[in-house]
Picture 1 (cartoon, rainbow, N blue to C red):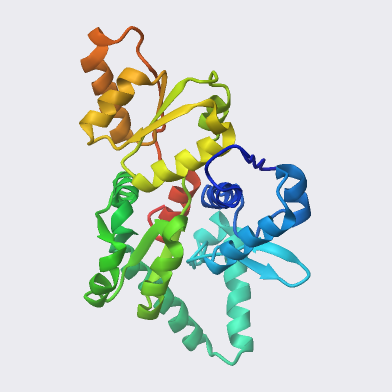
Picture 2: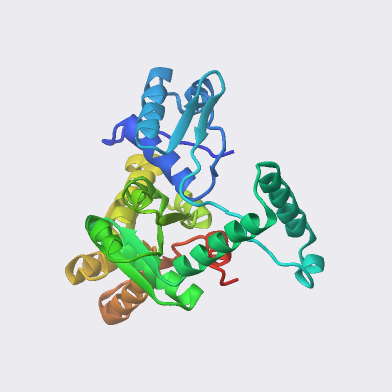
Length: 330
């Protein structure tokens, strides 16, 4: 069970602390689509917050399109984008290789026939869907807001390496214009931006696939063990990740730690962190390289080099596999 911690002495409002922790749990797939969130009573007992405050956070999550409130049933994580569509398979020899998938095709075909389709029409529907998905896989667009284009750069870089196909980074503000100029494609984005991306792409019949970010579970455990009053540096290409990380660190440790943040291209701030922090978290490969280079350059001036904790991936491994399957690359 995910544990939420609220620091009452933090300058960050308690509702904001809880909101960001729940969004992180959803974005990192700790709360997957369809998962029922804890009741307001359960969260009140865990966090010490008033149930009205928790209800306010849940209403905000619902307004943002992240959860669905079901009358008398609770609050559930909303399934967003194209999450795990079915891939049609042919007959022999794949029938023996994927028997469960073949049964699924049989049931789907039976349903189409029961709804009045002929075999020829059902075949055309299947082929049309497969052809559309193949066309979509020919062009992959990664999108993120301009103010957090660093997150888009992370996704585009990792997906291009993992998928071994060209990936185009498009600021969310320019997505509509780009989609007007293309007949097909697949838009990929983080769950943090899925609502805005879907509102642009769906009317244009372009599918949107959300990816889950790495859950940083090991890094959080290390964070909890850091000595009180030590200085912690946070470095990432994404300004959005830095803002979210600062909120979460404050929620977990309150005023116990001095937090410094920067993006790797800000040489002044990066050098300040290298000289001041006992521990530095880098959230992506580019940031890790920049931190190590800065430490090496300043080594003669350092009494003790900071401990560098690096995260190699921004996108969760499971999301990479699912995306490959959706694009027909697996």
